[in-house]
Image (tube, rainbow, N blue to C red; front, side, top):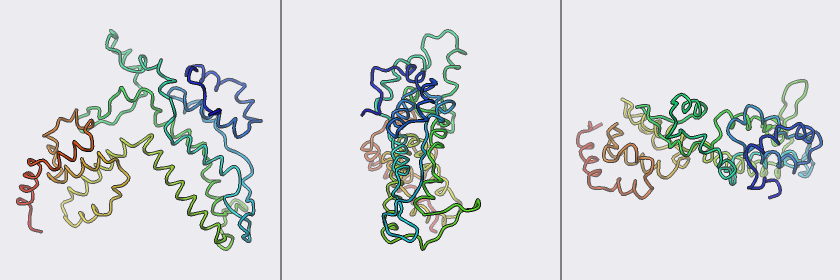
Length: 310
């Protein structure tokens, strides 16, 4: 795509170009294609863009209805800033094409060195790398896979540039008068309401993609802890909520892990048959085989026998 930088371009050069005065001058007269071009450069810069790059990501323009639905107050979903905002949001939330290729020369300096004599130097290199740890304080993610990821502040600051207020004001035909927001349901036509459903469906799909791109592992861990919390409730009546948890929002391997742990009572030693180190490397089929293993079935039987009748 014309909006994407070339692969031979280095990450440092991208950062220098995005931070240059020419970029800020270009933003004053930039077209939508120019804005996407700059955004794609920012998304291929090293972690830390949240401190300097958000102002380079801008979405503006007149949020005016195009009157295409024939409603009393005009149409909806008919202005170019909305289309542009969704394009920018999709670009941010989808995996960045070839990002690691742009940052490959940073890999050695971003990871702890095996030959560093100065331990403090090695620690300083990773001050900005946040990882999820288990109850023992051990890393649950491989640092070798984290070196190219944006940190949480980067993602938050970039997403803050997306004008969600204007987006929802536009699709709901909300008008701002005297500092207050006014919503009149009579302004929405039948066609506009169907477009609202279509827009909401697309937006949810984008958010789901964003969770998979930036927070799937963390969300999986949070989901597992939520299931454990409900399961360990002293009142068995709380177990009914296990039936309505949105299991479709987590990865398939995490679902198999939860099924396995439910079979043996969500005990801390529930994964004793598999090492903690290799737990995250198991495939879906390996988890499925573990669930159907005779030892697991035996533990499930023993657990049921020892449970109180109620």
